[in-house]
Amino acid sequence: MTRRSVKAGGTEKKSVGVVKKSTRGKGGKKTSDSEKVAKKSLPLRVLFVVGRFFKRIGLYIAMRAQKYRARRPHRSFRKTDKRDYERSMKMPGYFAFTGSVFGMIGRNKKLFGVLILVLGILNILLVGMMSQDMYASLADALDETTESVMGGDFGQIGRAGLLLISTATTGGLNTSPSEVQQVFGAIIFLMMWLATVWLLRNIMAGNKVRMRDGLYNAFAPIISTALVLVMLFIQAIPALVAFIAYSAAVATDFLSEPFYGVLFWVFAGVLVLISLYLITGTILALITVTIPGMYPLEAVKIAGDLVIGRRLRVILRTFFGLIMMALMWAVIMIPIIMFDSWIKGVVDFMWGWPIVPVALIFMTAISVIFMATYMYMMYRKLIDDGSSPA
Image (cartoon, rainbow, N blue to C red; front, side, top):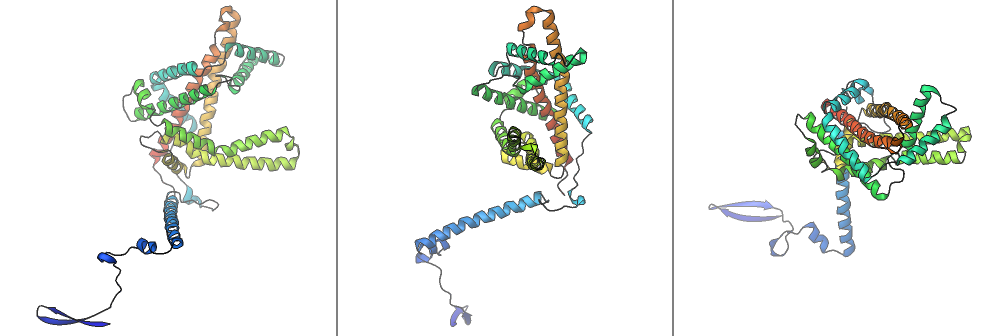
C-alpha cells in the first residue's frame, strides 16, 4: 500500500491505491495471451494452439446439439408420453388425397402432356429402349411356359401381367445400357422430377406458367438434388445389406434351420427399419431442395423436422402412393400388351412395330410425374399444417 498526494483545484487529496503490475509491453501496448505464449517454449505453444482448436470444436458441437434438442425434443431409447409426441397431420383420406393428385394432373394435362412427350422422346433418343425382337422372344417364351396353365380370358390377362412384370424387372427400357446411357437416364429422371416440382410450385402459387419456362428454369438445383439422391442411397445401404444377406442365405440353404431363420429375419428386419427411418425425411428433402438457394444438408434437416412425430404416417402415405402407381401400370399397360398381341396376330406388317417398348418409356415418365406430384402435394400439406414437434 502507498499514499499519494494529488493536487486538484488548490486542495490536496490523499488516496490509497494498490500497486499493480503493468501488463503493458514496450511502447505502452498491452500484452495479449498469444504474445505471452509466443515467448514460451515450442511445446507449450503447440499445446496452446491445440487446446484452442478443440475448445472451439467443443463449443460448436455444444451449440449444434443445443439447437438439435430444441428442434427435436424426443430422445432415442427414451419413452415419450403420448401427449408429448402427438403431432397433427391434417390431410384428406388416402383415396381422397390420391384423387386430388390425379385432379391436379388432369387440370394441367396440357403442361404435363408436353413434358411427358418431350422427355419421353429424349429418353428414346439418348437412352434407348428394349428392342422389338427381344420383346417378341420374351413374349413367345412366356406364352409357351404358361399356355398349359392359363387359359381363357383371365389367362390372357394373367399372361399380359406376367409379361409386364418380366419386361419391367429385366430392364424394360434397355436391357444392356452403357455407362453413357445410364448417365443420360439419370439426368432425364432428374429433369422430369425438377420440372414437375417447379411447375407445381408455380401453379399452386397462382402463377401462369408455360412448359418453356419450366424447362428453362427448373434445372438450377440439379446438383443439389443429385447430392440428396446420393444421401438417400447411403441411407438405403442397411436395406441393401439385408437383401444381399438374404440372397446369400438362400444360396447356402442357411434358412432351412428354424433357429437360424428366426435370427436372420430379426437381423434383416432391423436393417430394413433403420433404412426406412432414415430415408423417410430424405424423400421429402427431394422436394425441399428445389427451393431457390437451398443447400442439400439444410434441405435434409428441414425435411427431417417435418416428419418428426408423424414419420409412420408419412411412410404409409408414401407406400400407398407406390401401390397406386403399380395399379396404374397394371390398368394402362396390360390392355396395351393384350392389344399388341391381338393386332400383330391380325396384321402381319405390324410385327416390327415396338408398341409395348415405346409405351413403357412413356409410362415411366407418367410414373415419375405422378410420384413427384404426390410427394409435393403431401409436402405442402405438412408445411401448411404448421404444427411443431411437441
